[in-house]
Image 1 (tube, rainbow, N blue to C red):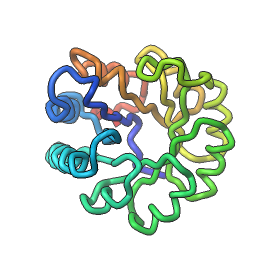
Image 2 (cartoon, rainbow, N blue to C red):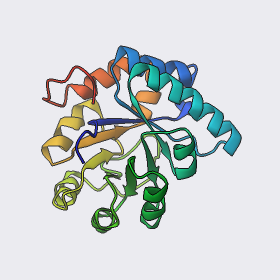
Image 3 (cartoon, helix red, strand yellow):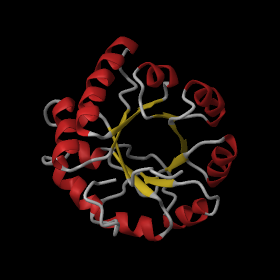
Image 4 (cartoon, helix red, strand yellow):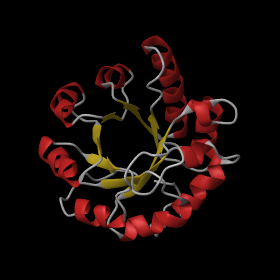
Length: 210
């Protein structure tokens, strides 16, 4: 799908130093982050909706994109740019609610990448590529070869899980359209600086990290 940014920043307010709102604002204004994926699935529905609406206003002011994890209805209500699903079976319903949005799916096996493409998803995150600090023991790591195999299906693949600024370029070389990051950015003292390091892995010449 054309127009998909190269970096997805996934939120996790439990890891940030300060307020998530401030982190997102800095990422979008200081680092030119083009795509924020609001996760926060542990929140109660009303709390999550309130937070998502605040972040949506921030991203709109910055000209950045925002998606919501696992909730097509919420994504529709706030006119989000997309929804990220955990189940391939939910793609069709999400497409009905959000005909023009980016619909992504989490994949943890190569077969799931192919199934997501056949279901009509616009992109997949493939994880974990490397061991992850955010989810220790989550795995086993799939490695760079999995990216190469997944990319053969013709759907944009985002490498997720333990991807650092140093390893990001290797993921792109293996065939990833982009990378999805959470803990490395959320835990950073200077999240914007980290995003700029990730952006350096892409030889796109783009000013924005997307």
